[in-house]
Structure formats: structure tokens, C-alpha cells
Image (cartoon, rainbow, N blue to C red):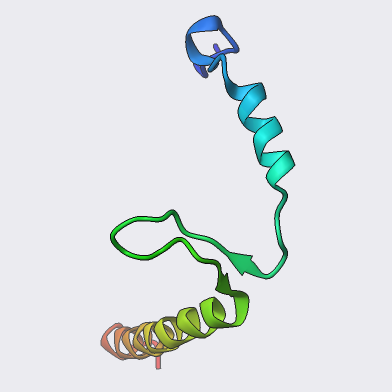
Length: 80
């Protein structure tokens, strides 16, 4: 039995085609990440290199921590 919701009037937004058309008209720019305007920023696009650098600054220490944890866990279980 399929329990996923189907395409019914209750779960389809009526303005979806209009929103899709607006997004198509606005277009997208490769290499640019935008955020909504609000208290955190002005909504100006961030260059892709800056987003990549930020993720690397966070991801590398996390990867090192995971590696060290797995190495210590292997010692604990006598795998090394």
C-alpha cells in the first residue's frame, strides 16, 4: 500500500505555477549563493569561493575530529 500523499487539491498550492514563472524570470547566477534579507544580512549574494572557504574552515576540523575518534575507538575495540 502506498502511503505517500498524492497530487490532490489539498496538498498542491494554487500559486505554484506563478511562483515557478517568477523564479524562471529572475534567473540564477552560477557561483553565487544568496540569502534572504533580514537581521543577519542585506541579502547580497556571497561569492562561491567565500562559501567554499567557510565550509572548509568548518569541515576540516570536523573531519580531523572524526578521524581521531575512529582511531581511538579502534584502539578501544582492539582493531589496531
